[in-house]
Each structure stands twice: as structure tokens, then as C-alpha cells.
Length: 544
Image 1 (tube, one colour):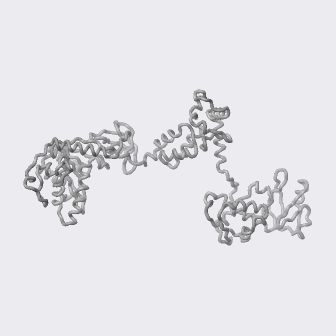
Image 2 (cartoon, helix red, strand yellow; image 1 turned 30 degrees about the vertical axis):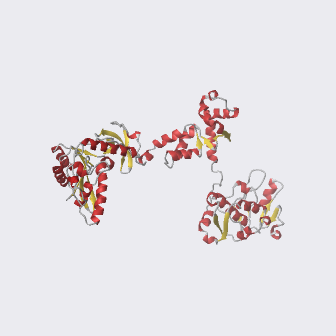
Image 3 (tube, rainbow, N blue to C red; image 1 turned 120 degrees about the horizontal axis):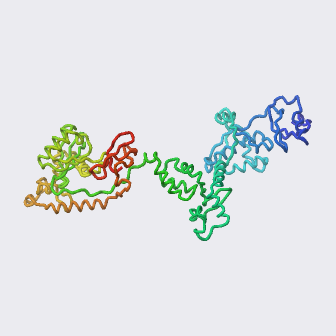
């Protein structure tokens, strides 16, 4: 190289690099534009290193001068000597690891390169390398990586991206724009300007001596500081009032609940009353309210107790073994009456109810769900003709008809076990009716008929004689059982579902979503309302 180009004025040869110099800018430009028949290849522009501004001039360079990695050199890089090929390849490795350090730091990673000499370079001692390579290798020592060689034709993505590099220069400080925005907003905020003055002068001894606008910062005064135009509460950024809505939107961007949003805010930002603002924002978020969980379990509430047998009954239909059954339970004696249904029509249900009422008397109240067999004109006509009040539970809230729902579980389990032993439905019902309700209350047969039912158990003769159980005693025991259940229940009152009035804006739980609407009517049952949704549909809901 020296033999070919060493005689050119102002040209120094360093390995395969050409350094063109000049004592003045005119001499420098003259040396750059000096024609030479040995220089065949050319490029359009080159930046000339001079004390003044860079000047672009046409210049000739050797044919083998090629572009480096896909990331363009910044102005800082261009102010140094142009790196050779192996340095550019190592610079690309350094850039990739530094750019994705959050993903590769602390674990073993594989780096692929199409420059085979680079592998041997990293095996050499650092002291034997050039100063530029030493600096890059020192920065790479924080990473645990393995460099392997792969031909360029197999590096599809890297080879494609290097041909169309991004025109934007890479900057490692991704928060610079954000800091400038916060600094400008902090300077423009009159309250924070006063707070800065208080910080510089020092806080007074008493809160009453503080300016009114900075009194909300008094509880955290020992944690406040100023840095580069920003105010900090410990490691949390004090948000100016003009940016608080934007920060609130960022805190709730993922639609977390109140607790998670407050924790996110405590890890980054602060302003007086921010916790309350976050709670209000979550509570007013339409998306969160639509997809939130169901209301907490309501506490058990005492219901009016009957004073005699078959005063009010609870009815429902259940399926077991492919057969539908009608179950009617007396609230006083807990006597279960269960019959298989020929069909699920209302006429079949009415016929079986008529048979049950003929055996035990017509009740005053029939409690049921909103099944089509009970919520129809035929069943309502049947009840009205016998002076029976039909009461239905709230849709999707089976707990309000808990008496028959609990007995369905008992009957199903008994049928499952007794059918396995080859027993019949009637034997299962006889066993349930003959079993005492509790240690204080006798069996449903004794409470309803005043006698024990003779079955497989050997009873003494006097135990089969009709007995009289005072209604006052039964009523007191039922009250005690009810009070114990209410005390042991883990539900808690929900004040949001109490004392709703007509026209009040609420959300009703329909098909797994909380849909907005308004209370249209208050039902006679406890905590039961008719809600008209925004689309015009009406739903009955239990304490929406």
C-alpha cells in the first residue's frame, strides 16, 4: 500500500486505511480531490474532518470499501477514524448486546457473525488488541455470550436489515423526552414553583407557616428533593397538575384493580391525593365495571317462619338419571314430596302439585324459581283458584330458594346411593322422612304426622304411638337454627346493594357482564328489583 499510494501529498497509510491531511482547509480539499489513475472506484460524498463544520466533497476511495453493520454511525462515531472491517463487526456485536441488555443480561446467549476473524480476536488477550477494540471488549465483559461463525448467506434477517438501516440514530436514554416534558411542566406549575422555593429556603417549623398551596406536601417534606428541574418524593416523580390526567391514564392502561393501580403509582409517581384519584378512576372505568367480579356473598337474612305444617312450601324440578323429578318441601316439618314427571310441561307439574296438596293440604305460599313451568299463566291460574300466593326467586340467584335447593342435594345423594343398591325412590324418601332433623328436632314424619314411620329399624311399641310436638317448641328450634346459620355464615353486607329506589342508575349482572341500566320497579321479595337496561331489555335482579 505504501509503495502504491505513499507518494501522494498529504496521504498517510495505516494498514488498509487512507488518512488524508492538510495544514489548511484549502490544502486539505486539494489533497482530497487530487486525481489518481490508481483509484478506480468512487463514492458520492464523504465527511471531511476539520476544525469547522463538515464539508461534503466528491472523493475517490478504494473499491473494497463497504458499509458496516445495519446501524448507522452517529456523529460521535464519525468524528473518529473510520474503523476497519473487524472493528465494525465487533461494534455490531457490542451494539446488539447493549441494545437488548434487558433480555440477555445474566444469561448465556449465542451471537452469530459472518466475520470469521472476529472469533479469533476475542480469544486473544485484551492487552494485545488496539485501544478501540480494548474499549469495546471491556464493555462486552459484562455479558455472558458465545460467538459462533455462520456464513452470510445463512444470516437472513441480519443481512436483510443491514441493507436498509434506520435513519434514526440510536440513543440509550429512552426517557430523555419524558424528562424534558416533566421538567417543562414542573416549571410551568405555580404550586411546584413555590414548592421549589420552599425546598431551597428550608421547611418552616410548623405547618401553619407554610404557603397554602404546598401544605398538602407537608407529610412527605423530608422525602422531597429537586434534581435537573424535577421534583422527587424519594424515588417517585412528583407529577405536575397539567400531566396528572395523562399519568392516571397510564396507570390504568392495563385495567388493573384499585390495589394494583395504587401499587403501580407508588413505584413511579406521586402527588397529594393520588390514591383517592386512582380509586375514583377505577370506579368510573366503564370497561372495568362491565367485567368486574360478582358482588360479595350477602349475609343470610332471617325469613318468616311458618307456625304450622304446610303453611308454605318450596318447589323445584331437578334431573337425576335421565329422569326429571318434582320436589316439594314443607318449610315447617322439612317433609319432602318427590315424584317423577312424565313431561316438563306446566300441566304435568300442576297435576302432580294437585296430588300433593290433596294429601297434605293446600299451602298459603308456594316458593319456586322462574322456570317456565312455574312462571306461566296455567300455574298462576292454578294458584289463584286455590288462594295460594306464588313467589318466585330472583333469576340466576338460586340461594333465595335455598330450602328446596338444599333438599335437592340430599335427595340426589340418597337416590344415587340407594339406586346403586337396587332400592327404589319410595324407599329413599321413606328413609329421609324417618331421619331426625337435628338432635333437638325429630324427624319430618313426627313433625307432620305425629308418629314414627315403621321401617327396617326396630321401634318399641310406644314409639309408634302418635306423639304431640308443640308448635311453640318447633318454632323456637327453627329460630335457633336460623340464628346459628346466620351467625356462622361468612357473608358481609354490601352497602352498594341496599335501599335502591326507582330511577336509580345501577348495573345488572347479565350473562357474565355488568350492564348499565336503571331500577324500574322494586319487587315484594327482599332485595329484588326489575332493572331496565340501556338497550330496552328488562331483567329481574337481586340487589344489583
